[in-house]
Image (cartoon, rainbow, N blue to C red; front, top):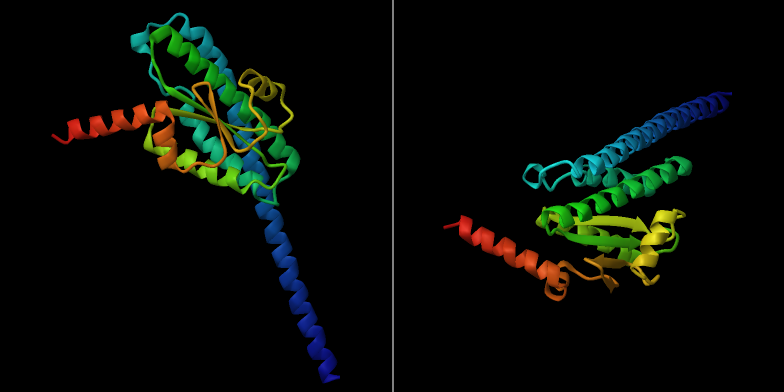
Length: 226
C-alpha cells in the first residue's frame, strides 16, 4: 500500500511538471507568433512609407535627401525573420506571410535607392543575396553571416536577401532580370553575379565595388587619424 502511494505521488508530481512545461511552452509560442504578426504589421507600414517616398523623391532637392531611407529598418526586421525561420514554435503560415511582406519591402527599398542613384548621382553598392531554405544549404547560412558582417563594416553597403525558391512573382522577376542560376548561395553585386560561399577577405579582393569601399574606408580612417 505504501509503495502504491509513492508511485501515485510520483505520477502526480511528474504530471504536474509536464503540464507546467506544456503551459509555459504554449505561452512562449503565442508570444513568438505575436512578435511575428507585429513585425508583419510594421513591414506593411514600411511598404506604404516606401511608396510615399517614391512620390516625394521626384519633388525633393538632392541636398535634402539622406541615404538611409528604409535600409535602417530592414536589418532588425530581417533578424526577426531569420529567427522565426529557425524556430519550430512559429506558425509557418505567419512566417510565410512575414517573408512575403519583407521581400516586397526589400525590393521597394532597392528600387528607391536605384532611383536616388540616378537622380542625385549617389553611388551605393548593391548586393542582392539569394539563398535557399527548401534544401539543406550550410553555405547559405555561412554566407548570411558574412554579408551581415560586411554590412556592419560598410554602413553605405545595401544588402538585400531573398529566398530563391519562395513563391513570389517579384523574386522570380529579379532572378530572370539578373539571370541568377540555382547555384546557391548567389550574390549579385551591382549587376554582376558571384556563386558559392566566399569569406569577407575574398569578397574584398575579387569584387571591384567592395575593393573601392575598402579603399575608401581605409583612406577615411587614415585621414581622421591625423
